[in-house]
Amino acid sequence: MIVIGGSSSRDLAKELAMILECKCILASSTRFPDGECYTRIEGETLNDDVVIVQNTYPDQNLIEMFLIQDAAKRMGAKSITLVIPYFGYARQDRIFKPGEPESAKVMAKHLSIACDRVITIDIHKETVLKNFKCPATDIKASGAIAEYFADKGIDIVLAPDEGAAERARDVGERMGVPHDHLEKVRLSGTEVRIAPAKMDCRGKNVLIVDDIIATGGTIMAATIQLKEAGAQSVSVACTHGVFTGDSIQRLTGGNIDALLCCNTLESKVSNISVASTVAEELRKGKKKRLLRKS
Ligand code: R5P
Image 1 (cartoon, rainbow, N blue to C red):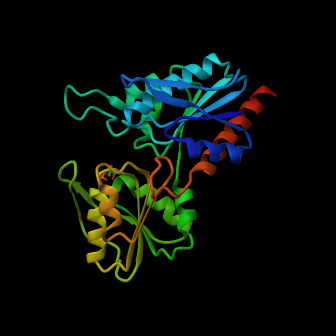
Image 2: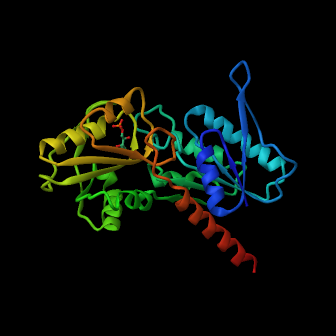
Image 3: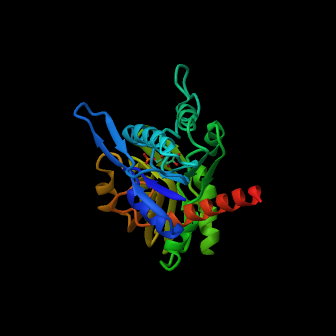
């Protein structure tokens, strides 16, 4: 197996290859003067199963992913698995208003043109997976998050809305602490209203878990609500720290006691690694292939 790291995910690719004890090639990527992407996998031939690690967000990374796939195929990759740490466009997974595209479906369809398998991590909606033209699996970051917070004295795990309730259950159960979800109403792209928690949070160390932090509006509102309810501390963990605008500064300079994300998107707070979880999934896939051959 050979791991190829695209420009969005070089550190994750290196860590993954280290765990899998296989070769890692970092695709070199630059931009032409007009902004178009130039990418190259250096070496003679691949002649092995290839794993490409690259985000499909922002748009430049999506183009790079298409080009790396083509280069890998031409260099003799026996099979291509795409590991997409953060799958962009997953939130437009259906038509909300007439005239809109089904963006997630379009991305999945086109990404699967040259690959044999896809692995995503905490994709916003798992229903998107059925649009890939090859087997696609979503793996969860809950184990890595629970492990990170295991010795941090957390009393309660909360999801900021019902959509993330399953994640809070998974993390809470792994940590052996109670879990619940808050009720959220979205008022605009940047503003949300969160109802008071049903659980008594007075004097408790609360961990909020979510899949994405974008503007930070959700996490900010949930934290304010929990601090008003008397929580002793509020820690926040999300899988994908998108952090639009100056949200990372606003979130780290306020009421939040600890802010952590996974390394699906690299930032100054992406200290939770999903590399072992991805490696485990790749090992399972390899084992299945070997069993089929024998
Ligand atoms: C919503 O369904 C997601 O799970 C996140 O809660 C949301 O994307 C967070 O966005 P923001 O940080 O802009 O509130």
